[in-house]
Amino acid sequence: MPAPPRLHRRAAGALGLAMLAGGGLGVHRVRGRFLTDLKAAHDRIAQGSQLVQTRSGPIEVGFSPGRRPLLMIHGTGGGFDQGLHFAQRLAAAGWRVIAPSRFGYLRTPFPADASTDAQADALADLLDALGIDRLPVLGGSAGALPALAFALRHPARCSALVPLVPASHVPGRPATPAPAPWAERAIDALLGSDFAFWCGATLAPDLAVKALLATDAAVVAAAPPDEQARVRRILWNILPVSARAQGLRNDARLASRPPPMPFERIVVPTLTVSVQDDRFGTFAAAQHIAATVPGARLLSWPTGGHVWVGHDGALFAEVDRFLRGTARAA
Image 1 (cartoon, rainbow, N blue to C red):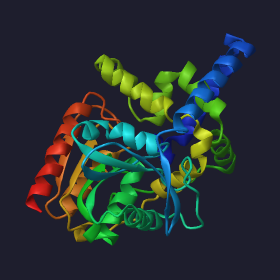
Image 2: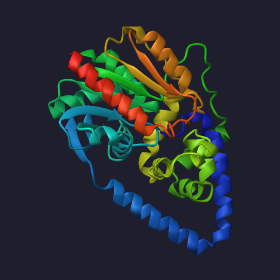
Image 3: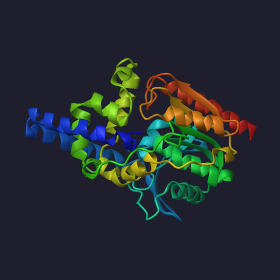
């Protein structure tokens, strides 16, 4: 769930330095490795999803096997692939994960209205097209915004809500300042550049994890090997970034100035999750959700960064228990 916009300038600088460092590898070697990795990324996203026709237009969706449907809404830099990856433990527990690509990500077109509310309404249209009346909804990072909006706008369709590391409004926290025009042009170019992203992930992975995944390298280095591999996969699965550029730009706009939402009107069981050292500051947002949504509960850890390093098993085990508990109570 990389890069809410307040760190885009830092990411641009880190990746720019990495591109300069790439000259030491030799132009032909760099080009060959880049093209090989880019082809592998395109091959990966070419399978595992389908286009579903809805009233809001076509929406790309990935599905896992399972009986109980669950909607997983990806974060910034994602797509159906990120949604399936994040919820893989829930799929292993028997949930049928439904993971759409949001507006402007991969094969889902970018409409004239790509607001948070429009995204939430498109999710309701997707459920209609799939013949699903009601299900739990999870949303990560910037994807927590349409998840929260869905619970407010379509409460009868949402049986439970889980905002993960939410990029939502915090009262009293100022909006992220708009970048200078030159920086905005650089960011725009970066968001559409597979090569710039590849250079950063290849040559400066610690900087890329810190800038894009808001997680300190020391936290990753101290984690078990499987968690280190999970973080690497999250980072590398952003490639091809060019296929996600419109969605990234939209998330940059929405997550930099998330509007207040009437959380006190959310009527579904809610579990919100964050980590205190998340460099994107989502812990304060999760605290606000837990304090405002009636009956909501907060699950958190002191360390782990934006991608909850070291806690993936515990996190989704608790989410599974929460969702099964709400299903029994319904």
